[in-house]
Image 1 (cartoon, rainbow, N blue to C red):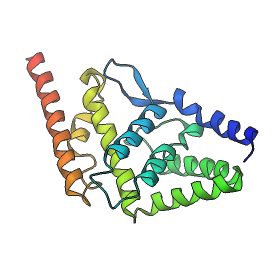
Image 2: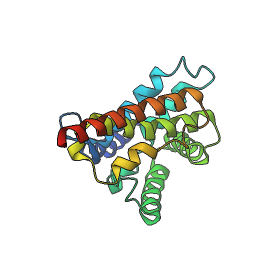
Image 3: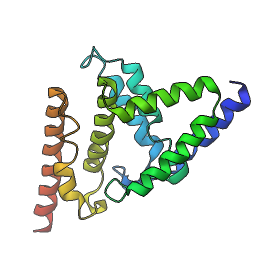
Length: 191
């Protein structure tokens, strides 16, 4: 890869800094896709000792690239995203990846295939972190920014995704405690 190709990849990826997610930060500002990707990468880094059998560097790479398709489509909340939306995002991402310099294209395509198959510990860990980070962010955001369906979604989402790990199941329970406490505070404030 030459320097121009390197810069062109970064110019496309930069779009994620402006691609807003549905969720907000603690201060009520809309979160970017890039911020979400950064934090799940940090989560993976922090779990290296919890999952010593996992290739954490691979998990971090998965976390870094997992939402690159949103460079082309923007973010669509999981509860609104249709199969057609997923197909469009996948098609545009696959076209872009195929056009990258071969050494990058092959590495990226291999990671995406592993992530999609959800057979390896690394792929399962990335997917769990992706979903858990969204829940954590919702708990950190002002409850006034929650959509009506998110009260129930924050109570039920991602339990299936963490089933492979007792540590992650326990983390999901802690996140649920935070959710219930947040909802309880809102109910008490409005009573």
